Length: 315
Image (tube, rainbow, N blue to C red):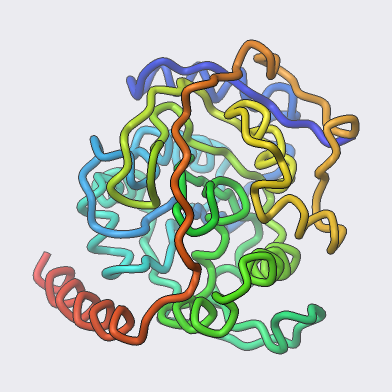
């Protein structure tokens, strides 16, 4: 059985977040089950683009701070990393309040575009994996997604956040090469998830994003943290919490087809808040648009990246 833990948290007050993490991790054996003294631990929040904290676009700094604090308490070395769709990791983290939190815990922020390695692939959708060396070299990885509607993939949570481990513009290239077929795009992301194998996933659903996403949606006070060693199982449980038919989320049938993670609720043990008590029926989902990007969007993104790097250099 795969365990998925759900904890209530009504606000981002640090004490409230700390108590929710205690409740969340207890059924999973505590963080010490996954992180050892001397480990390098990569924290992977959602840093999609420049946005303020109140917009619910990025993982909240209070959630990241709690992860950093616990990693430090265990004598491990935390690192915060991502490859934003727009801008540099440093600049986006600064705008989201995560830069200040990282400095408090002496955790460097790494941009996954800067140290890229290529590995052989076992999947049919990706012939060779390109990803950050920081991802592959970490002793443990804590995946810290923001729960959001996503107008290309319906929802971004445990699985989709790991797509940020693909460096820089390679993500946009995959949108072009796989984007005319949503199930194929989902399968490609699952092949990356199988390669990455995050140690632990903790979803920030305290204030989620509804209606559209991953940007410009409506903040939605769900009041939950959700965690598991299996990001697929997290997404499967969230389907029930948000009243989404599981096959409507492309990652679930793709994971079932590939045998990545657990997609069957009868094989998932939910601890903490029961799904029936966590369930909501008014989480607005987006109208889906094509997955593919236009070449013009790539050019615009490159211009924004150049501006962001100059901004980060001046901080």
